[in-house]
Amino acid sequence: MSIADYSPGSNFIRNIIAEDLKNGKNDGEVITRFPPEPNGYLHIGHAKSICLNFTLAAENNGRCHLRFDDTNPSKEDTEYTDSIQRDVKWLGFDWGQHLYFASDYFEQLYEYAELLIKAGKAFVCDLSPEEMRAYRGTLTEPGKNSPYRERTAEENLELFRRMRAGDFPDGARVLRAKIDMASPNLNMRDPVIYRILRATHHRTGDQWCIYPMYDFAHPLSDALEKITHSICTLEFEDHRPLYNWFVEQLPVPRKPQQIEFARLNLTYTMMSKRKLLQLVQKEIVQGWDDPRMPTLAGLRRRGYTPAAIRDFCERIGVAKSNSVVDIALLEHCLREDLNKQAARVMGVLRPLRVVLENYPEGQVEELEAVNNPEDPTMGVRKLPFSKVLYIEAEDFMEDPPKKFYRLAPGREVRLRYGYFIKCTDVIKDQAGKVVELRCTYDPETKGGAAPDGRKVKATLHWVSAQHAIPAEVRLYDNLFTVEDPGAVEDSETCLNPASLEVLTSARVEPSLGGAAPESKFQFERLGYFCIDPDSTGEKLVFNRTVPLRDTWAKIKQAGQQ
Image 1 (tube, one colour):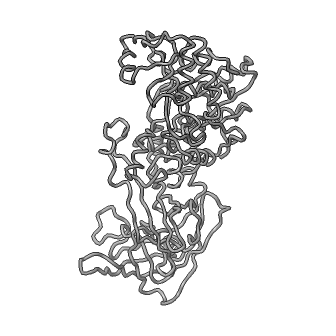
Image 2 (cartoon, rainbow, N blue to C red):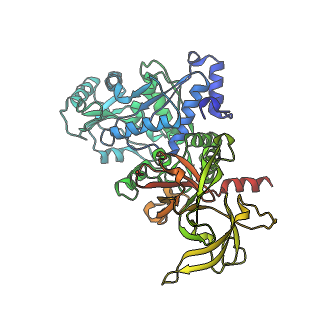
Image 3 (cartoon, one colour):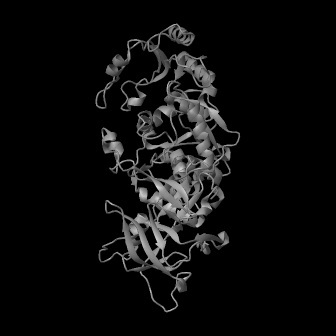
């Protein structure tokens, strides 16, 4: 689904932009930006901001910039900038020529800082971090002025230039804005705007030993790019007065309007980039693209589609207050998309050998199977059928309960696209485990219907043992066992020990041979799966994307009754 396919609903940000255009504000332009910090991989929460910023610009014949707010070199890396660009493009969005970095503006930001100093609105402070915290005050008590606050502009300018020249050790001095230490908004209490930090920057190398703080660089980068609507999440609402203060004090080419919206909170999902990084560093997960991670790289590897994620972001809408979205809605959007596009195939996860005793030895038939009943243009394929098959182990019970309708001794079931079969004997190993079933087939029931009209209560999937391809299947579940892992002090205590199960003896139909990584399929009766990049010519590896059961659809249906 492209941007042109959207049928956007109304939200308060769209209404603000419409009113601005109606009043001729910003010369009729709409310029937004997606401004990630390159200190980790993007996750599903970022997808909401990406979709919002890019679609708002596209809807109004504007443009959206991709800008990296790279002001903290100690935590940033080109690995992250590369992954972010890759993920934004995978989602279906393109910034064209408008790729920027805050580091592009380091010289201009430095000049802005000098202007503030010359205007008496910034000063060099020698307080230690501990002293600065003590001077800052609390939510109920005003702060105290730094003893260095009244330095002359000339003295501040000299000290700031010496900071840039590397004359002082890290942390010895900072540049602070001179605003109001009695402000009820703590962000306005003379915030730090530059610090000394000897760290090699991934783009500027060792050119700088002072770096601007995010709250200083961010609004001024927006202004330099002539952003019209600076859209951010609610945690920046208290920073808006500071954002406005910087763009009002300095000769910037445009004064953007900051608008906050509620961030995405998803059940059973960790949204803290810092805590996700810890999972990677401690090897609790197998990298940023582990399919259990909520990163876009992880979702992509698991088999999620860009269209499903964009649809999800549009459905949850844009609000002014925080809420939590059920992860079942995200999975529902995915199932709807995959149902339309994923080819149906046969795969057996836990194989149980079935021998059709009355089937001709050495005979192989080709049965016709539909590739996708939702899309007739996808056509049909041929499935080999032979004397020895594999079925799912859980589709047989020797002593079944009352409502178990699948295969059991003496019982007849249908094989998908094949024949009726009846279990006549059960073979066990020395430990008493069922290892093989002996069955008969009815040659008159080819295609799954009996000429005498008799009915069966179950249809099973299967593969031909002779033709099946060995596969490894990775079954994924939620990484956390609680709905809000971010609220748990030590989130590692609520990790799900069953978040990954690896099956090494699975078998899939031969049509899957040679399928490319990220190819998506519906294993009939089992769920949606995709081919993992770990696959080789000798071994196919599948990730279960999502089971067939759709909790959200059932919740929605129940609510309508």
